[in-house]
Image (cartoon, rainbow, N blue to C red):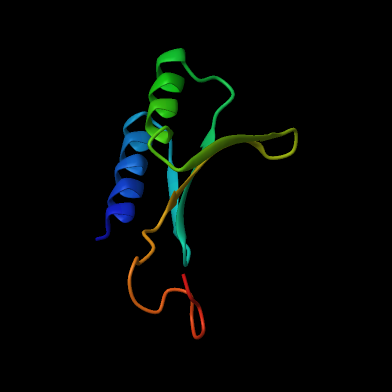
Length: 92
């Protein structure tokens, strides 16, 4: 497992330990971790959830009146630093 995969897995495990149900989704350049947040959530659980997503490259809270609240985090996958990174004709 890559370092970014380990970070996303650890983040999901911490959210799960806090009582949330995280969903992990792999994408080409990043991994997302999302969890629905219930209306009544204790302050210590909020603190643990925020500490967990703080290790991500980006995170936030999506709140709507129709779908409730979703805590989300994005962990970027490592980009190779050598080889044909930019494709044919790419020069640094």
